[in-house]
Image 1 (cartoon, rainbow, N blue to C red):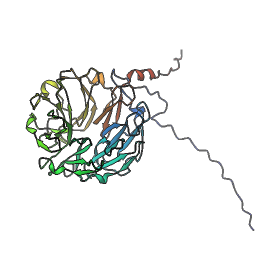
Image 2: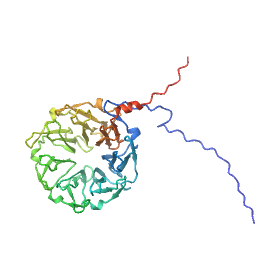
Image 3: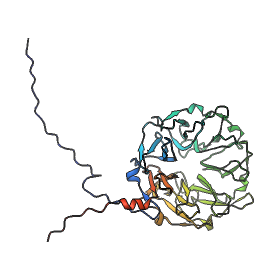
Image 4: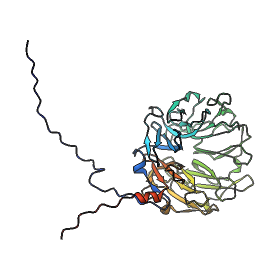
Length: 434
């Protein structure tokens, strides 16, 4: 028998890897807040500087009392960021599967009546719309097969359209054949929740008026004061529309009530009382082209309700003039005076150049002034997309999550005084030699 021998290999010293330049040998001075917001992105939002975060909703998916973020990702997997307290977000990989889609929008509601938040996503190029039921603990089950039909989705809204106390789904569709290609006819989709089986849907799309919808943005609101939800539609290729609901989810085209003075490529629609008269007004976010050449006027537009059923374009006397494109933004009372203000995403086109988010203050009578430098922290620059709002840090005031296309999603928190109290002092350096 041969004896076996074990020979110890000589120890080889391992060199420590060089320090990473992002955190080596410098003091990271916190960014200066404004009187309204501070930018908490670096400490509170998962780092993803190239993510196409096109839309988000802030909802409590795990029933712990704070708001979490569900994010629709274009050419990616949709994301769940769980709020771990004070607005600090933790990414939960695989919450909505692991297959990439061309996701455009997300909305949330309790579709199946179990008391937990569910979410629905729509996709554009691959036309894979997704529905997930929440378990109330932050987990989700894919039930997308309950969506009866698909389309090239470019807008999404959720609400009770037939007054049966169940949330329905309205999907805005487009028919673009390839980026910048031929546009063919497209139909919007209306899915009504089944009262006998909540969380199942039947297709009522064929009851919608028109034969070519081409929808890039939409809002559900009671525009005629009769107690049911009507639909305002923004289009990238044709005039915007108003559909009036009869209360049973049957709609009549009343677009002649909209004062549409110029061609628009509308990407998002908001309904709110701009001038404080108790009536709902319309705000359209517009672009000059979808990252192409200069085409249409990208000026955002405000249509004021005249109290007689018409919406009159009073943009020239009420809004700041601009030439940047704005895919989206939000309505929020950021100064706490009771009048709703505007946060407006800004991207320069041609060029697709990231710009600073704009803040426009409402004087209470529907006249807006640009107060960006007083409200928005200077670091907040990006290709701002859909923006969601809610009280994320628990201070009772509204915070803002800004989606970005190919730029970091950013978080503006409102507890400015608390932030100032935690700002570290600059380190003391050695005194200069005599």
